[in-house]
Length: 558
Image (cartoon, rainbow, N blue to C red; front, side, top):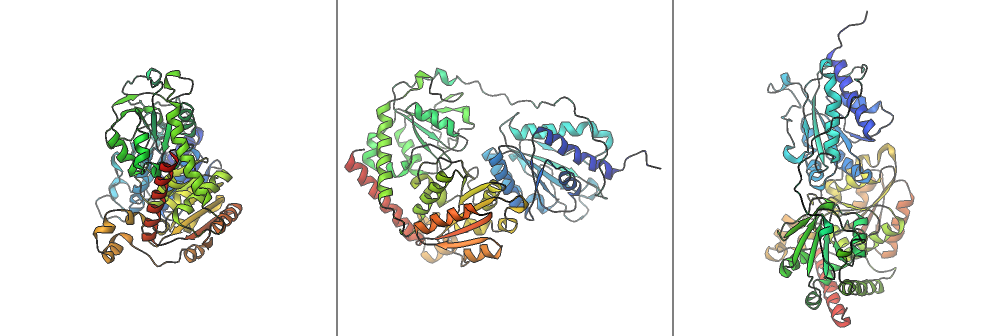
């Protein structure tokens, strides 16, 4: 004779199944899971749904950034399931990145029930509001009971709505769900779907529309960053706005950083108006010049939060530019000046490249972007030097390009690239320390879903970005290497092979191009280690190239 009252184990199995059922109806397709006992009800509920791709990764930190990559690639919330204790704490870095980069993640941490808190139970930490204000919404429903079944779909609805950005800017949300033992049970009939629960939208400041913004005939410099789409940049360019973008920007003007190091060029291109959209480029030269120019600066809110750390924005408008708005058409001669100068640099760079050219870091960045453009494969760019070399020296990006520029850390970049490439293809440019920092991402690779991911790693044997900073000149070299350069002796090709992946070391431009083509043609993870000069030599190379560009634009008058 069956029991008339469901057990707590059955109730929590039904609760977990209801969450995933509601999210599947709304479009959930990817769940990233790290193994653990307390999260068993959530794991079983996800594993039984054929609509879901389940990605199992043993390192929670890697799992979080892998999920971030999937969410970037699919533009859809991705669920992350972990057990209690330090497993939940391991997600803190990816939650921080998702918060500031507006990436939708459904963070699901399992927890001990209240009676096991404060009594020395294992794997028990304070998980309530663990991620603080970094999440858009937090839910802690307690141990599931059937009498509360009518609340389960609304909980799932609120989490999805906030993650998607339907109630506030998109980003991570957090469900902390307590489960009691026994943890294994079968789900009962799920509560029926009801009318959607609509989360309240934040009240937005009323701004004048972009259509009322008049820039006709002015010299307009448009600075764009993360969050600005290729279509928006296309519209800006069509309006004769000069678009300077970060590494993720598609269609922006190439080589602006080098151009702005020429005092002659800077004197000729002072804008009458600066328009800001989305995030900011990495270029300190651009940031300094904008401060010096003190031009009228306007922000447009249509691409999300406008980064303005120097507080230069004086006016704000709502919406996005469009080529059909006549009052937004700018000075064509000003745009031509920038285009001609950029074209001069392009010709100079291309004329100096041959197939047997020895590799250096800017050359590697140029080749990787060119391969992404030619193949249409999405590009993932690591922080520190790669993101700068792509922004400064690479061709204009044509393919979708991602970079973890919310917090700008090197955390989890390997895993993010794998998340973008799983079931498809991805190409990534990352530093040697970035690879070692997230080497656990190589443990699970692309998993059962397959795909192809090529990781190009310029090996300068340490943290290359620090050699460009004042510390390199003001600190004794031995101490600098200990604290900042931090070289590591590991052979990255051997490291990659130890995890079962294809790996090769290349020294020439043709060797790099061939290795990328071969890596994208095969399934699995391929690591290409690019042998490049020392970090001090890299600084000298950048200075030489910048000096050459300054002389070039002065002589040509471009």
